[in-house]
Image (cartoon, rainbow, N blue to C red; front, side, top):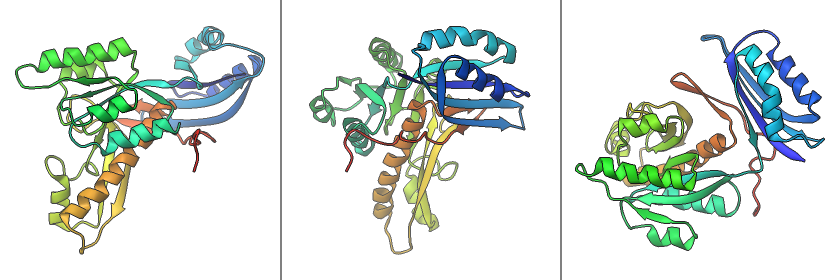
Length: 294
């Protein structure tokens, strides 16, 4: 049986849910999970449905047959194969905690992705990446070669068929052009609980202010630095007795988990762009299970 999910975004109006549910049933499919949201401020409707095709209906057939209904409601829609893994390119510099966390989660099947390449501007993690049977690309970036370097990065993305680029503490600012070309397909982890403490050394800024919570933010990358739509955030509590170095260590753990959760949501098609914000639906039952538990 084919497992698929349907994502829908359109202007809100009466009858959308009933029409979609009726269509799914008519195609011999059984809905196993459903989430929807009406944004009353802008009149937009968002929906994600997981279903099983019990009579052999294919994803291509569903896509073709749904077109008429989609036209009626002015829908942007896609049917996704839930059994296929999203191809991802990971980019990293000299902080490897997020990269190593992702490699482990992928290895045990906890993330529905395939890392098809790792790109870095340093050699620090070349051996780790190659030992995981993943191609490693050293692409150094300077002010002088930035256009050429980004062209090489885009070449890797295109040749691997990657659907998503993950900046796992990649410490280079992407050009406006690349951000536009990859809109909605680049996820970054920011080592701060945005929008506070932006810029260099956010943990030292937090330490100097005596904050009791530090955190991390994962967001889509846009031309506006660290202003992209937020996907996931989390915090960890700290006390007056901890040092700035403690903040860094605790922050790294939060960064790794927040980035992984953001990728999980994106790979499961649970994230919808809604202006400068996102709609993030809860995970479907069983989507956090992995091939190697315990």
